[in-house]
Amino acid sequence: MLKRIVQASFLIIGGTLGIFTIPLLLNLVGADKFPWLNNSYMAAIIGALIFYLLTFWAVEYVVDFVKWLEDSLVKVPITDVLFGSLGLTFGLIVAFLVGFALNAIEVPVINTVAPILLTLLFGYLGFQVGFKKRDELMNLFGSKKKKTTEEELDKPFKHSLKILDTSVIIDGRVADICQTGFLEGTIVIPRFVLQELQHIADSSDVLKRNRGRRGLDILNRIQKEIAVNVEINEKDYEEIQEVDSKLVKLAKDTGGILVTNDFNLNKVCEFQNVSVLNINDLANAVKPVVLPGEELNVQVIKDGKEHHQGVAYLDDGTMIVVEEGREYIGKRIDVLVTSVLQTSAGRMIFAKPKLLEKAL
Image 1 (cartoon, rainbow, N blue to C red):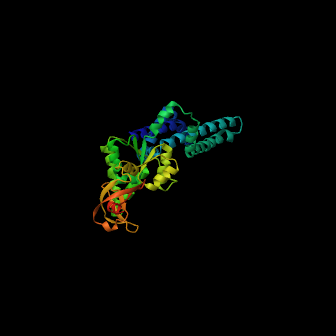
Image 2 (cartoon, rainbow, N blue to C red):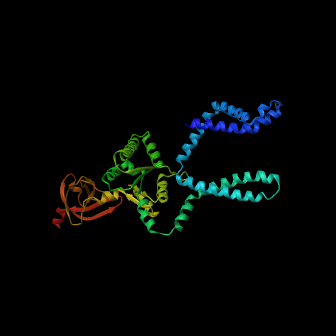
Image 3 (cartoon, one colour):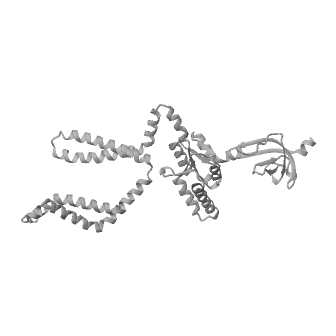
């Protein structure tokens, strides 16, 4: 279809140019003695025929260029296209007004050349300003809006975007959370995160390669097996190198919530006032509550960092530090919980042997 459109365009251009140029060429070569050649219809047919013959050589190049241009435009975020087009339109309007004023000057060069140069200059400047200042323009328009009931209703929609980072995709628990329905809204997968996963999956290191392939399998599961909306965000920030910084920037621009299990990224988001959901926080929240004074039966597995400490684990993987528990390594004992420390990095329980408590 595209090839036919290009050929038709060549015919129209050739016919139009033939009407204006072929009579002039005939006069130059002295062929004006043949009046039938000076006919406009005949000139259009000759011009169209010449350009039709050119299509056999040029049509493939034109089609490839159009497809390349189409692919490039599709990858550009809609906000970039919108603000770039607005800037271009504004620049062309300014160029037209200035060129209209210059028509009053009766100088041939200014009347003909200057409008063309002004159109190119102001069009280019308008597009660049609109494209590069898009974030500032969005913030400007957003700050001038008054808060209305519609905007308040729109807030949940904005926060329904859940942006997944690389670590939480490789972790895999996010797929189970989506399947249970606790993570509502649209799941956003940035293109640069997909590229990082692919790079990890192509690594020469076996462990990294397996982690990358696991992440890709998790994404396929979320997209095909789970009833949630999945969106691939094409926006990239070429001026930013770190993937984590790109994620924070994307969350700011879209108003979405960043989903991660990276402790450091969680802290950066909190510092920059970006909404974040930490999978580890959710996992800690659904673990059984253990209060100081409760009794647990655990098996001491190894010694701890401090002197005479022993380390045990609950079934959910929670670490229990047993004071004076080193001598019980390899044994199951009853312990009393003394304190519980819970952070985004995990939960840690401190306890002491019940036998020691009875002795005291």
